[in-house]
Image (cartoon, rainbow, N blue to C red):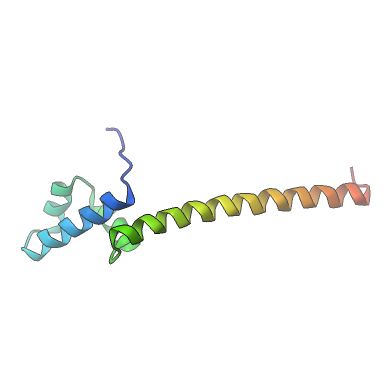
Length: 92
């Protein structure tokens, strides 16, 4: 079965739907089946996005992507610096 990537807005909306169903007395297993995710995915989403609003979730995802880009940039610069230091010392 193919995996589907959900946007942050979709995740928040599905979590809200799940909260309503749980409040009405539906079990977690039934809720997961209705929103179309596994139990593990539901709990992971609840841990990451629980209590967020749609716009906050979107901003959260954007910040995660920016953070990953910056970490990669720092790693590349650190590698360049190390190579230049090795060349300056004459360690080929």
